Image (cartoon, rainbow, N blue to C red; front, side):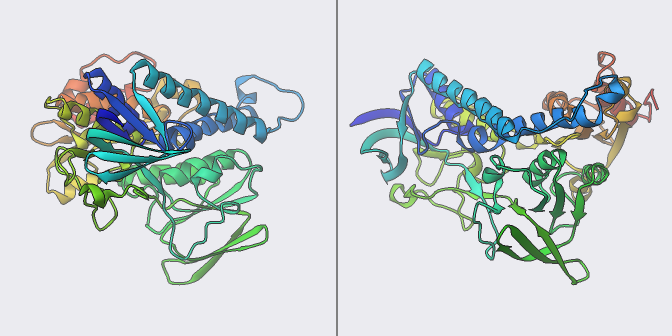
Length: 466
């Protein structure tokens, strides 16, 4: 039986980063993955493939709608080759997961393919092509999450689908009904909208991306409606039925009236839930919460002191970069270091176009906490860079403490917001004031000038270009 200092169960961004950091710190490390490729949901059926399709569909939309305005004439009909688009996406996935294989070899981490199941707190059985058993002084549970559904919905994975199937459709839907107006539904909805599908979003709450700042939700809703998304907010879905190649969704609107949606595909995007199937956590003395999450303390330690858990399987936002931070945190904790994570400073991103990104507190959270704050907001369309690229939608909003001027939250909708949010994270990590950011030189012309302008607006309404 092989013995290890650390065994990691699950090879998503949290798991493989934890394994690498453990190996860097001199620990003999193993990683266990039930699927044949490493990288977990994110690399195989999540973040990476969805971004590949978002980029491909964006190119197509630009060619059809915007090239002519840029003085680019393409004779003949511009056609979609969906099969090629999907195969390019798969090539991106294969290259990325292959990169994780390389990192495991480089860091001398032993990879086991199979389902890891606790026999006790220090022994793990791995059921793959054959069953093996290993011993580990410490174990990190990084088993991730799976798409959730509603109790009355039968996912046939052909017409009534999850995000996993939506990444490999054989045809562009005529009418895609999306249940859930969160990140996953909107991103995949935009892919197929660009490719010619009619898209209807059916959301239970009164706004899309409901966990984000209200102003951001409103702006994104406005932009997507302009892109001809059909938004149905405050709608409670009560049945989803398939009839041949047709899917019928029935919901009650906010007045209690029944509304029927008929399409050829229905994407169920109502969130994700922690995945612990086959883990046999109780054999190791690991407690789960009522919601099926692994229960952890502030050190991400489970009820079994030598076992830790990270990522989607524990409380908090289900984000790859949160899992990565937690993987590093646990590796360094096991090594006797004193790492820290500020969960308030983990950014959230929606990769629609325009993109949406945020870090820190929303206006709603500040109001609820009774914090005196001020707001600086700047529209993207006032930037030279935005006019040059024709990306005019959106804004940057800076929330700062009214008394100290410390930045408490930054929220943005616009081109490259996913990349720009890092500036706000750095500023807030060092507890910068809005004035600090307003006095930093920002290259011209760039999208990031909107951050400087919003910071100027937050400090005495001093924005220069509006």
